Image (cartoon, rainbow, N blue to C red; front, side):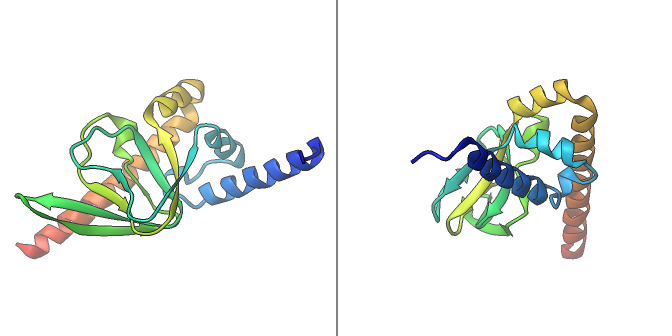
Length: 164
């Protein structure tokens, strides 16, 4: 049985509101209005992955940013031919693969789900289109990505300075 248009709209509005509220807590969307976040939902693709599913592989060209809506992923890195080691795990609200929105280069690590996981994807081609349509919001997102990358680089530098 199909939903009546008013019930369908109410359901869709609820889903839309949930997405906007979720995105508010993601650092790369910090400082964006509800209206801007609403526009972002238009370029987000949602995908469910089973447990132990490869999301992307180190060395393959990246084409999307991933945001964990539900579940968990493990990031692994191979080193000098040795078996790959888990370098990080991320849960709901975390994001990864953000460099793919800036340029299409090989991934620096491999990512797999550790349990059933729902991810929000933003493909570079859609993000580039979005930037053309709304450069002010696009610039704010890029600025936020730069802040995140800077913090991660600082963290990595601190880690390596302690191991030397």
